[in-house]
Length: 225
Image 1: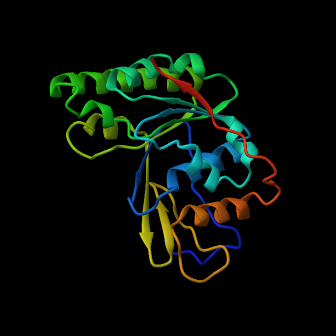
Image 2: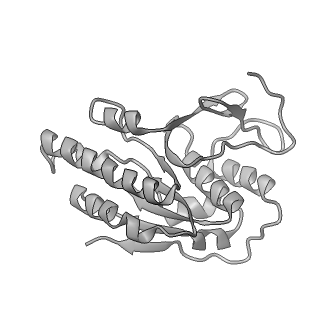
């Protein structure tokens, strides 16, 4: 389906259940932009279990149309497969009725390295997915997840995903596509398409013009031990 450039850039909505975001590596900031847009539209907070540095304060701050928005993103960072598994076990305790989104980037990253045997990595992947499923069942909350690599290890993740959103670069701008939609994000002020963090910040500012950037708080972060 073809679309003309809209007055306001369009971003896909994230429905309840598990959504797999399959993003072009060239599109730095796509995940962060979807997360920020969702919590601004839904007027809620996000619980983010991080892997591989996807939740760096610098990246989120450069994308956010308002620094106050970062106060609504609660991040727990893992650095080993066992820390990641522990954070997933604690996930249900971190989600409440004010949580409008759970974010799980590079879900499989820690389960495919030298730290774990292949069989143990598969077992931990399955256990982690079951823990996420329990949260979805209890809270009926949208969960967006990305995969570090698409292979046999992440096959259960792709099977468990109720929705799949792809994001790829085109000559017209980033293109989001899903089962029932297709949307292009066009440059806000014309000219050449840029896929920098500044581009996504302009898109979010256009979508949420009432926000200001008066302060720069830190993202709320929880460590894992």
